[in-house]
Amino acid sequence: MFVSHHTDDYPKGNAQQAPPLEEIGGRNLGRDYKKRLGFRMYHGKVVPGFPMHAHWGYETITFPELGFIDHFDSLGNQGRFGFGDIQWISAGSMYLHDEMYPLAYDDRRNPNNITQIMINLSLKDKGTDPEVRTMWSENIPVINGKDENGREYSIRIIAGSFGGVDALPPNKVSWAAEKDHHVRILQIKMSPHSSVMIDAVSPTLNRNLYFVYGSTVSIAGTKYEYSQRLKLDGNKDIVITNGDSEGTYWLLEGEPIGEKMIAFGPVILENDKAVRNAMNHIRNNEFKEWPWDLIDKFHPKGTERFIRYADGREERPPL
Picture 1 (cartoon, helix red, strand yellow):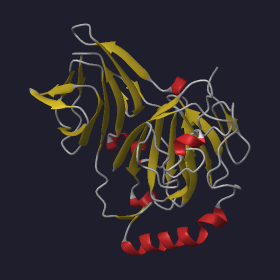
Picture 2 (spheres, one colour):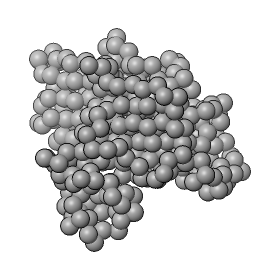
Picture 3 (cartoon, one colour):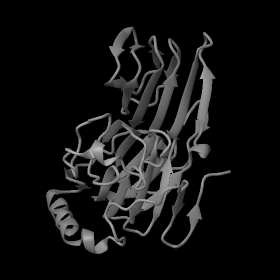
């Protein structure tokens, strides 16, 4: 239902893993969306990012291709992920977390490149307990192939399958958990003039191709410039032919849920009354239910990638 992509060229971090004071002076800290000196602070006032905020009724899939994200949540989970890891959150009921972008390196710049995809939940799964997991980059399936002319491409499989290779299992309540929902999320990287075929699935499929980086792409004889979303036929084999430079694409597709819902702010539920009640609950309880001492909490300098659950279990990337 929504996808965002942003890049920021953050400078070397100081002792607080923050930009130097001279680079954040004059900004509207707390709501800085203007890219000045190559970066934004977003809602962060020390470390860039997004302090405590709510999600309710949908899923988020967060993919930092470059950079780290520190997170703490209302369940008592905490962690740091980045550089190709994926965080998958299914927030059937109220879920609070922060997402901060620490400038972890003090000897070089700290660029980031973050894509976040939001998927709706069916009505039967709204109200379920939130589910949080981290999928380490080392475990995410990637197909490195060549087209019939020997030109290379690389496909990262985040949901669904491609070329006979399955993604890691999604969260249990996800719309992607049922195979006949045909949810597929692929990041496709293509060398100049290479081609990739996306197979036909069903006549009711919603299929979107996001052209993120590159020059041009040709589909069915029509050429398109980069930085576009292209709606494609889910019931046809589609050949994507990249242009003169390296290209990066996101394929997002799936069957529609087909249920009427209402959205406002961070809430998507069945009707207006439910959304209003949820928003009132967030306003009245978010600070009461936040278990941490800060709403923009981040991890100490030198922290490696990990997730620690509220019950004390800890996971780290494979060695």
